[in-house]
Length: 118
Image (cartoon, rainbow, N blue to C red; front, side, top):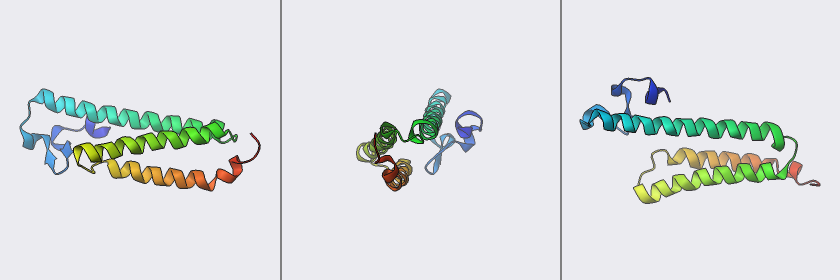
């Protein structure tokens, strides 16, 4: 989020290329930084929602919260996998897959607690 909103354009790097190297119209550079800001906002919103689910219903043993967490992270990983298939790049996709692995392991470790009476 810092790069999208507050850094100068020389810090805006995509892979090994900066926006200045591309000699783009300044409006295109602004659009690209806006997209990066939108992605950061969605990431923060997803994280906040996840924290509220974990500290509320999930902590109280609600099984639907377990499935909600699993489904949300699964959708996140699926969208990242589509990026690999359609765009042919792993940039950013590995983060989603690592997060999926960590969350699935954490949910499986806590499955016994939630397997009691509904």
